[in-house]
Amino acid sequence: MKAAVLYGPRDIRYEEVELPDIKEDEVLVRVKYTGICGSDIPRVLGNAAHFYPIILGHEFAGEVVKVGNAVRNVKVGDKIAGAPLLPCHRCIDCSRGHYSQCRNYSFIGSRTFGSWAEYVKIPAINAVKLPDEVGFIEGAFFEPVTVALHGLFVMDFKGGYDVAIVGMGTIGLLALQCAKILGAKRIFAFDIDPERLNIAKEYGADICINTGDESFKEAIADLTGGRGFEMVVEAAGVEFTEKLSLEIAANKGSVLFIGTPSKPITLYPREFEHINRKELTVKGSWMSYSAPFPGREWDLAAYYFKKGWLKVEKLIDRIIPLNDIACAFADLETPGKVKGKILLEG
Image 1 (cartoon, rainbow, N blue to C red):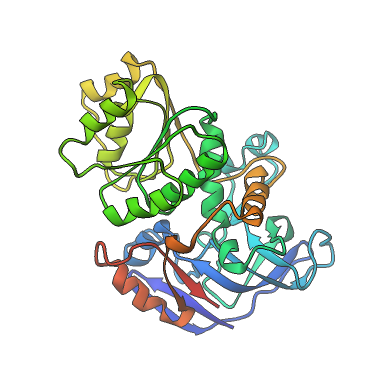
Image 2 (cartoon, helix red, strand yellow):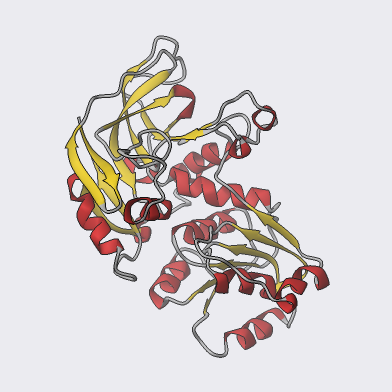
């Protein structure tokens, strides 16, 4: 089969590799679409890969073409999305349904070969069936959708309140839509890019605030009566947005950090004291799983797409053949050139 194989920083090659052999509890999937995640960028353009050579890719959907003898939950011909986490299912965290905290985990597309290939093998338990109404492109978004949903569940999201979502990248725009589905009163979208804010408005934001405007904090005060937000979701992972999320939270508010920072973040005492003085509940979110594995996040992603409540068209920068992956990463090296998710077509 053909695959995009990473041999070192910036050294990705489209070449022939062996077709994976499956075990009795695994399935072989013909990849239809697979995404480039933000976490893949430092692996390809930097030195963050766990080993070389490696086939990356963990956001994917495809068709089951072969099943192991012990597989009962899916069959050949089924359309599926792949849940990429490979927990041990034996440790204390797994026994409590906290699969994302498994210390013995592996992961498709970072610690084992992933979906930037014509075929990928996965445990059958990791195969999430796509409803008839849901296509493969939407299936390739199941993983980021579940990341957004899991975060909202972690923060004990409640409908009927205003929510601020800071950062309108892929996860932020999906969190926005999920918050709307779950009954948010008003959704405030924050970003510095007017194009991303326009998408946020189209996808359900009630109020869009450009953090590049000098008076944006005054606007927040006017719109919230000086109180701030009961719920704040940070989805950018940069120092400015991490600090801003604490600042704009209301007294007794909840702040959720989904964004993963790649650089050090320094909080001065007056910035840290937002947590103390306002008695904030601050939580982090990691991955997208719950019991029974892979979790209700994945079931709901399928249901929300089936009902037509989630939209992803404006989240896609481009769809290209897998053999053009090196060109995609050449563009990703230029800040601002890529405006959304790049999907690779198998």
